[in-house]
Amino acid sequence: MIDYLRQLPDRLTRITTSSKLIKEIDGLRFAAILPVVVNHLQQRVMDNAPVPIEENTASIYVGRGGVGVELFFVISGFVLALPFASHYLFGSKKVNLKSYFVRRLTRLEPPYVISMTGFLIVLLVIVNMPFSEIFPHYLASIFYMHNIIYHTWSALNPVAWSLEVEVQFYILAPLLAFVFFSHGNRKHINLLLFISIIAIILIQQYFGLQKPPYFLTILAYFQLFLTGFILVNLYLTSWKKHVVRSYVFDVLGIVAFVGMFMSTGFDLHKRLLLVLFIFLFIYSVFRGKLINSFFTNKWVTSIGGMCYTIYLLHLPLAELYIRLAKPLYIGNTWGINLLIHTLVFLPLVLIISIVFFLLVEKPCMDRDWPKKLIMWFRARFS
Image (cartoon, rainbow, N blue to C red; front, side, top):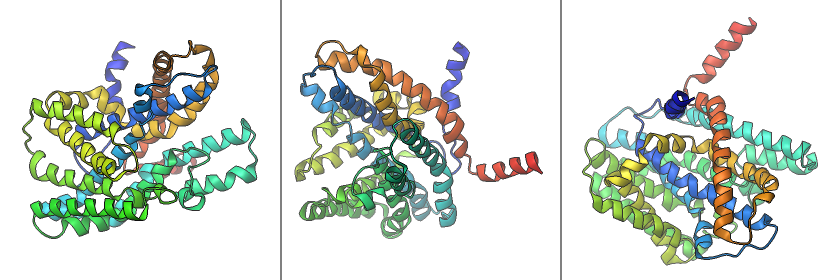
């Protein structure tokens, strides 16, 4: 058992076929998924408590854990821009657009469809929701159109809203990469990106694109994906071969991480600060000593590497868990109750996510899994 646990991080390491695994990115995914999970757990702890639970300053900041989704958007900007930027700036292999889109489909669709279908069955069989009522939401979610059609979160799994935004970015990423990386020198690229980010935020503020009904579309988040573009430019030109780390960036990273939670909201200055703090946090993870050591730890990167599975499963699991855990409430103190439920829930969601990741998501990371599956069926049934 001990040997298995020691080997577990290696078993959970993501399969990457296009480039070298960047440990900092998976560490950043850990930093993004944890506050999202705790935030959603806290909401259910507060809403389902047998007695009213008193809120305090700490609960307010925990309730802003949705900032992890915005951190995810910046990470996606980095990851998807990386091969395109590498080609345009350093002449590496050109990205085949057909392979790019097929890869997105074969990598991300199976875990998504399987999980959403499972949630549909639960809602039909256990919750007894009418088929005619829930099935249209299922179809809209499966095709990443729920936000556009219904202007609200998916009825099967509310967190799927951000995956629809991600898909919109996947479609636009090749064009955006061409616009920003194919012309001019490397220093001018970041200046152009910086000006574009400021301009986008101002346009969003003027037209209210950060609010309903646009807040569930990429129109509200362009600036975050482009922030990832700035970071990938820095990575390729300054950090990929050699990076000088300093304790100064450890302090800056902690300040920036806290600043992210203090900068949520629709006000212009908060939205500008949020982009700045996310940028500084990611910058510091690459440039700091202690913070880099933490976020490249094999356990942290392993959990961060399966964040997609955790993201897909954690909210329905939290709904189920809270219905079974009401005896765990103690008094009306927020901190004690959240701590108890967090200590119980996080290991549960982690164990279930590990099983799903190893059985479903990780096999889909193999670029050739469709061919191998066809060959397996032919060998089995020919």
